[in-house]
Amino acid sequence: MGMKNKITMLDVTLRDGSHSMRHAFTEQQVRDVARGLGKAGVPYFEVSHGDGLGGSSLQYGFSKVDELKLIAAAREEAGDSKISVLILPGIGIHEDLVNAANAGASMARVATHITEADVAKQHIELSRNLGLETVGFLMMAHMAPTSVLVEQAKKFESYGAEIVYVTDSAGALLPHEVSEKVRALRENVGCKVGFHAHNNLSLSMANTIAAVEAGAQFVDGSLRCLGAGSGNTQTEVMAAVFDRLGYKTGVDLFNIIDVANDVVAKFMPRPQEITGSSLFMGYAGVYSSFLLFTQEAAERYGVDEREILIRLGKMKAVGGQEDLIVEVAQQIANEQAVAK
Ligand SMILES: CC[C@H](O)CC(=O)C(=O)O
Ligand SMILES: [Mn+2]
Image 1 (tube, rainbow, N blue to C red):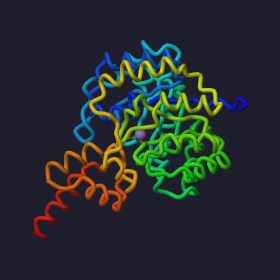
Image 2: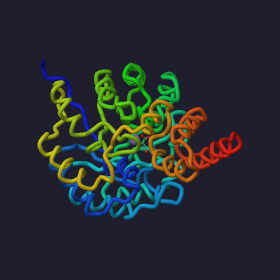
Image 3: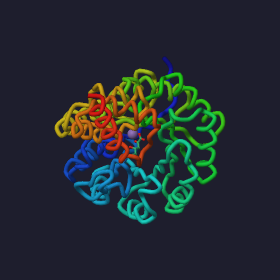
């Protein structure tokens, strides 16, 4: 097979993995992962609270260590890798982005719900003014038709985004849907295109291949899949698979496997399995970062996690509505008590 194009890998272990770690990364863990990613030649990796800059709160969970300290520590260890940060308008503010840039971030990914790109205008403009590489990150991409995705991506482009992401937050997309969405962006939008997957239906690698074959230039992964729900496309597997497919990633396979096994596997709180609940997140289309909150609510109210997830999916709950999880659990418990 002849050599194909270059693709750019972005590792999200130190940001999406923060959900799975209950936002309890230590500075030493971040330093060790950052050093390993730098040594392996991963071009970009992300460091932030799981819910982005400013996410440390009662609603989303408090960070054990301040994210600016973690970004600065990662920068010291990262070698040639660039550091990205995630920011959700409404959670992260102007000052957070300025501080992150001063701490060493060189890319900002501004994330909104799939239909709400217009809330990101100021953040995108600020990011460009700070000289950061700027990404529009359209979350819960399964919740809108491709025409809406294109319209929203065009808004991001008009605000100044240089890259736009199809983000499968719920791990609900099927490969042909990913192909359609990425191809439509490549055909209709001037920005580069990225894809971010969750493995709730065991499709993250297949979906990532579909994205690249449809023209995506940026792809996300996490070491040992450490991320929300069943986690993301596994970075070290992705490096191997794209090498086999003839794409250039610049990532050294031995070194990336070493950091996954010798560092991340040692501190992961649990394996990133596809459990009944995370499978249901993909099936019902629920935000992957709701997993641990749903498990806690199910235990507290003595109800089945899957019942909660199905209702959240029907309600089309989106990020920021974490408080609904407890309400739904209470509602199911009440209904069950009445039915007895
Ligand atoms: C809450 C932000 C979210 O975790 C961003 C992301 O990675 C996704 O939507 O998949
Ligand atoms: Mn994610």
